[in-house]
Image (cartoon, rainbow, N blue to C red; front, side, top):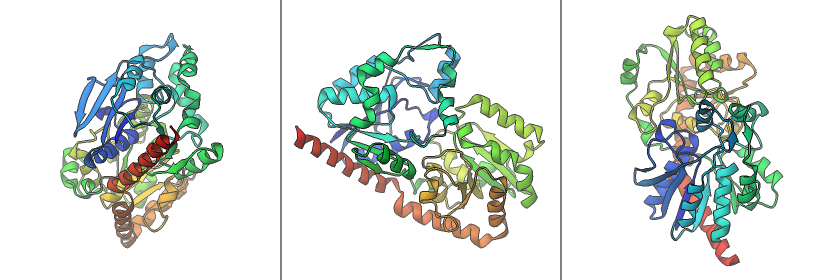
Length: 414
């Protein structure tokens, strides 16, 4: 079986949940004897061709169909929310030999390219919804197009040509990483096959790490109680909340130290985070690391440098970092939003809090600080669940079965 993973971008330095899913499942596809490769644009990339752990990555020139779009705005769209187009990518996808299926990792114009080529070649395609479509807060969705304000969009003609608006309806299967999104998608598209396929984790990789060494390198006291948030530094991930509540967290435990690790996809938000910490005179109790390469051992060490993992997102279809934290044996506190409550069992393998209620987060943190048995029980239960239900090997086998069913059905209908 030969497949193509079609994405907007695929760059180590700007790795996120989507890239992790593509990379980890693709490695396992290759390990099972299947062929797959990544085709994407050159957004944020320095090279057009690369091989990552045996996975071929091919990138192509692109553009945003706007008149008057400034270079700075283009860079922001590259980081998050941009909908580029590439004639070169379309042409390359048409020429991939012996292709059985295209896996789209996004809709809009890139998804439209995949839909168009699949139709022309008479092969099926599946679509993954990584960041949410029907369950995205309006404010979050509006922020994606904010950089293009003041310019004129002419890309509707491209969307019409490649059928961008038909990407979801024409898909042989729609894979949702978040359970609520899968329910909403099935309600909106009752005639489509919608499948809940959660994210996974490399549980063995995250099981061991050098926490003390990480603390020493970044000047974090060895006796601190480190609360880690590892996520894109972006308004969606809501790092401002724990930063704002740090005085209250330190009232519960005076050794509390916040550790924020993540690629900066919203520079203005990052600047405000730094200013917030400085204004509160809490710089000695906060460490901000704007990005660690996804393949670095330091990423694993960051989890092992922590005592508690916190994901305070205001919108989260799934939350792959929770699985990574579990794999490292960490107790987890997370927002009661999106897909998180579907796989985090509140009180058994994690604690959930309501994002609109500051006291809810403080109460959850107090529970862990005052009950060491609860802290260890949550970490152990999460680690077991990650290994048994969410290891990438388990997820990849489910994905292969979906591919095979879709390809077989397409063959029968020819």
